[in-house]
Length: 251
Image 1 (tube, rainbow, N blue to C red):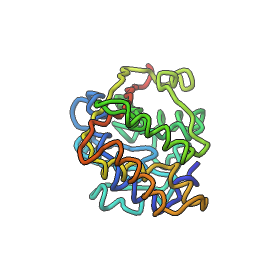
Image 2: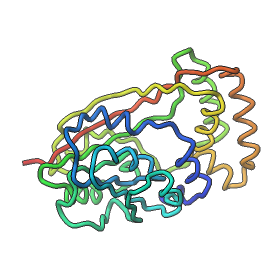
Image 3: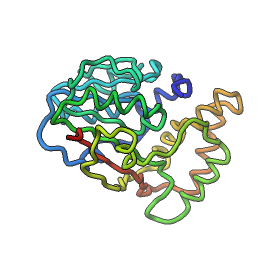
């Protein structure tokens, strides 16, 4: 699945055009104190890794698609990164007090990735698995949801992603115990221009452009024209529904 993310445009969009949601979902995990070392698995452009900076003295992000890390220094300065897969983490046993995975495990072989996450987690550490869905709803009414349905028809999603309920993970890896689970909704005030940049950063748009279905300019024009009907000259309160699950090692 890393081939979907081997894209300079996608890396730029993930780095600079997506709302800051990660730190607000991590806050819902209610982590106590500061970890010595934290690992962000499947870190993408590094935005989720940057959200760990207040939570750990040392932070490392790993991402299988090297192209996604091009803007890592701008996104998460002072943080270390490595190109690696969740199924083969290049770190010693019990080397992290905090391990996170934001929307990344859906693409992995869970029978191989979960034992790796358990292996590198320190005995008293925490594993936080979280994700958030597309921002297709606004508090002000159904217009954005109607637009998003058109958006998905215009730009179909690529295959490879599968839904994942983190509460099912201990059944796959008995070495993990679910400590806490929370459904969360992050509300972000966005202008039409900001939402357009977010929409253009999605993988379905990038896939259509790379496949030659249309140019990036045409995709931008379509989003700009159709979103004008939704936002007008104002802002909307856009909702990102998500969840946060915290695990510890089973005793």
